[in-house]
Image 1 (cartoon, rainbow, N blue to C red):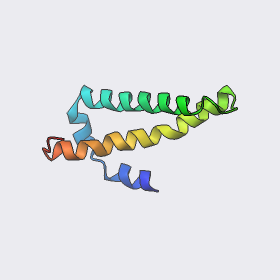
Image 2: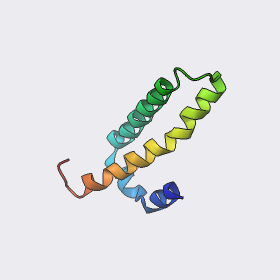
Image 3: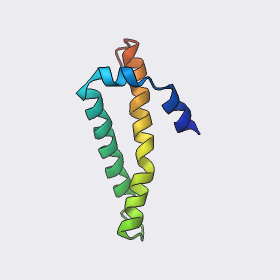
Length: 79
C-alpha cells in the first residue's frame, strides 16, 4: 500500500524533465540493491530461481527510494 501511495504522489512530469541522470540514478540504485540482496543470500540454501525472486522482490523499494530522493532536490536543498 505504501508503494502505491508514494507512486501516486510522484509527479512523472518532473521526473521526465530531470533527464537521463535521473533515469541513470534509478538504474544505479536498482543495481546496488540487487548486489546487496545477492550478498545477503550467500549463505542461504536457495536455488537460482529463488535467488532471482528475492532480487526482484526488493527492486520496487529501491525505485521508490530514488523517486522520493528527487523531492528534496526539487526543493533546492543542498543534501
